[in-house]
Length: 152
Length: 152
Image (cartoon, rainbow over the protein chains, first blue to last red):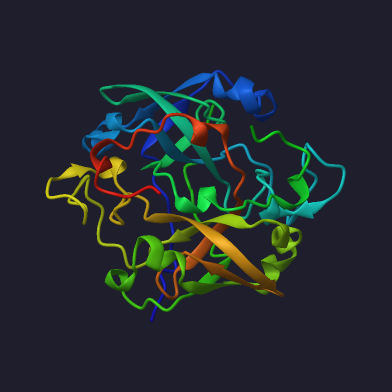
């Protein structure tokens, strides 16, 4: 079986966010109250039908200001180098950001959302509805993050 | 501000799955018991450090057998056309799959996981640790899917 050699992404829209620089993006509760807008380009607008029925969405975006990829990362919450794939650090081989956001409103081709951790002008790659998974109710282990974040 | 015009992905690995064709992928409980292997290419292996501490991971993969993009989709669970971004249908402008999987074991550059909905030979794009979000405990609305799936 041949695998597509070319995996090229198209922006389906662009983020309008109050955050101009990566280090301005807050975390936790503060982030969850921040409102951003996701502008979907007119040629993709038809795909937004029915989206307003969902309370939460996954937003996939391109971290266009990410530093070059590295396989180890020193997370903000830790003083040790961790494997990149055990972190959400931006300097990934494929700088894709994934954010679970609350949908506030859809106005034509604009989604108003809360909790998006993308900076202003980030290209939007995909939107997927959030559908709770029974796996989320299993016992969850969060490795090196244990005790470093408040999950409540 | 200029936005990266070229957004090209690199495969960091490949899926080895029992599913050869898209329509062989089961859903729900049956999928969650299916084991797949994610082979990470040696040049990215260092990034797997610390991953084994997490019980669940998000896997981003390229749906290399997805049909051409369309902005409306008739989901398996519905008899009406729905907006693509209100579905998980594969024929997206950017055919990226997102799967929350249970991590069973890490053996060198191989992750054994359960619940991956990718078919065999899908290119792996990214791995992110699953960290529960307080948003998951909010009231969740699932739009047109309401009453069509069992979330328990």
